[in-house]
Image (tube, rainbow, N blue to C red; front, side):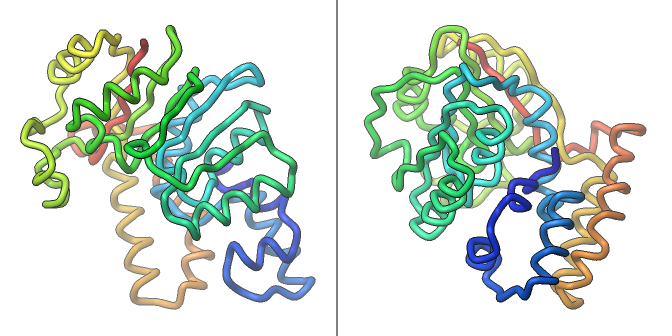
Length: 262
């Protein structure tokens, strides 16, 4: 599965809303084929989706919670292919609306709540919890992280994408937390797991050398050339990023995938 392949399942009217452009019949067919073959043309999302899919182990019996679910590409796709019961938290109303529309069309078991973890009172417990955009903030906030852990079933797993060096993050995050380490080393993460009575079961580098080069190339094309060329170059950049699997240079990792088990 490609990240964003779910878009190839959408009707013409909904795909127009998601993309923000008008499509004639021919262009609608071409766009659907493109999504089927390559997914959504965003390298960063593709790499995260690939890393996530290799470890999440979903089935129809799994209850999934996705924090800051965005436009619902990941959670709707998992619900579609694995028939899992999923809930997404997204406080951005526009993104939450698009996510809900996508979920209704293939009749998915996905629900979206227009809120964040701080404001929601979750009665349900989950087998899998995913946090990408807010993971560092959650780790830095003891009360919020404890609240998150309480929603995890015994034996359930929490998957987080973290920057390797928290000091590179925004000033807003640093102001709200005083206990961020200089680097998320294995020892630091073992300490976090011990503090919250969790097991650290995986730490994996993400965004290695070739991926970073491909990502910078894509960003340059998008900013300095017509966005159409981003669509053309994306498949070739995917191939380039794939060299990380053949020649991994872990010292260049930009982010890490961390998995805790309760």
